Image: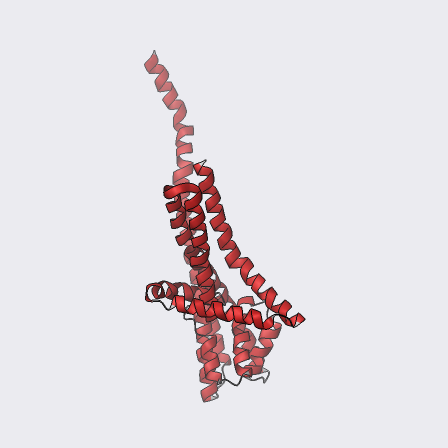
Length: 289
């Protein structure tokens, strides 16, 4: 019975994390869209969002929480979330949902299994966020290569940087779904009258997306010096492709090492049994005589 309750608590914790990561952002966006379409309840929804954002900000600025949030906030930001969304999602995913799962775990399974649920509920969301950040980093570095190609093509056609990025954000969304969120943010800042340098700094704020940061640095130099960027973009593309090939080689080598361990653990004992089994049986028969 205790094992069943423990399994139910683990499943509940996983379901809570899945709802916080997948369903809650979708429900939040759907509620905003429906409120704006119907022109009803928009003020109440914005007030609730503002209240939750202020609560998340006060929570993440607490000295005991700040260190953990700096790591998780950077990981959430790299997935395309704004700072406000990152704070809210951190509060919900890393504290509210685990607290609910831990409470249910202690009530249903007791102290021992409840402690295990608490450990899993605390560590699992952070592990999932880190994995999401690593995946988003790889994808956005690859998408940034496509961004360099398209920018070079549009700049050679005579478009400005603002018009090129606006066109890329509108037309290349299927090719670069993650970077499109950052490009939309850049375009909104430019439409609001922000300085181009500040908007570019916001676009390349995350240091882990190396290709995008090199792209932003090149665009800032082009804005100040007025020089052509086609050859420089070609160099950025070449360096990014070389880094990607090196990364793939490293991952391939790691896969080979992992397969060696798997073969040693699972295949060699079976092979030894197949080869040495008849010999062992013969020796046993001889000794029995």
